[in-house]
Amino acid sequence: MRIATWNVNSVNARLPTVLAWLEAARPDVVGFQEIKCLDEKFPREAFEDLGYNVEIHGQKSYNGVALLSKHPVSDVHRGLPGVDPTGIEAEGEQSRYIEALIEAPRPVRVGCLYLPNGNPVGTAKFAYKLAWMERLQAHARSLLAQEEAFTLCGDYNVIPTPEDARNPAAWTNDALFQPESQAAFRALRHLGLYEAGELGKQPPGTYTFWDYQAGAWQRDHGIRIDFHLLSPQAADRFRGVETHRDARDMDKPSDHVPVVVELAD
Image 1 (tube, rainbow, N blue to C red):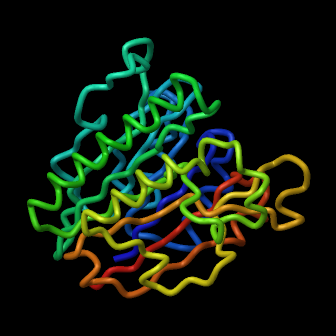
Image 2 (image 1 turned 30 degrees about the vertical axis):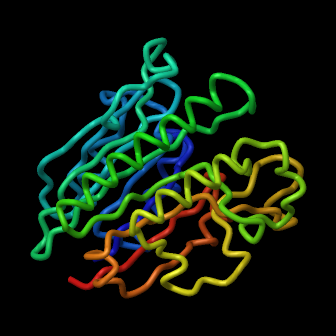
């Protein structure tokens, strides 16, 4: 089973690009982040025509996540469990998490997430990021207790180590590179989750995001912030991981590229 995660940065603005990639890569399951549209504005039929079942957790203009699966899906959950202590979610919708059980012959649960950016540091937005990561850690702990195969995949908006940035100094003051963000990501992994890029021995420089500004793509000033974190039961089935760098060079590309993990059927 091939499971992809991709921050598409507006599914409607990039629909031809997204469809072209799907037809070429043919993943069984896809988690999208930053779809940037309400559920009713999501181009469901275009994906159904490719054989996907579609589950959406949308939001007008910002955020938004979706799951596509060529297998039936069940036990769909929208929104990350837990209460936001910062008040950000009380002020407005934050559609950042969707989860479902993929009913393949060997089932796998997929949680698709768009973690808060957190900038600027020192504001409520950074506090919200760290609080959201605490809730994600609590949810991951509850999923691990079920002892089933799952991946928590998506745009984590964390640069875990200096090796995950071409130019670490450029990110010194950014929320993605703060010690608190990195510590929260490590705490999540230390629960017993396996990072697919590490399992697949991907080399340093396997970036997943290049900004549209300042020629970042042309100069390869990338960062690695999109991940699959696998449960032990999913890691037992791990067969490989691919970072589709070529998607950044497609027509009207997202600033992120897909990361695809392969699990034994």
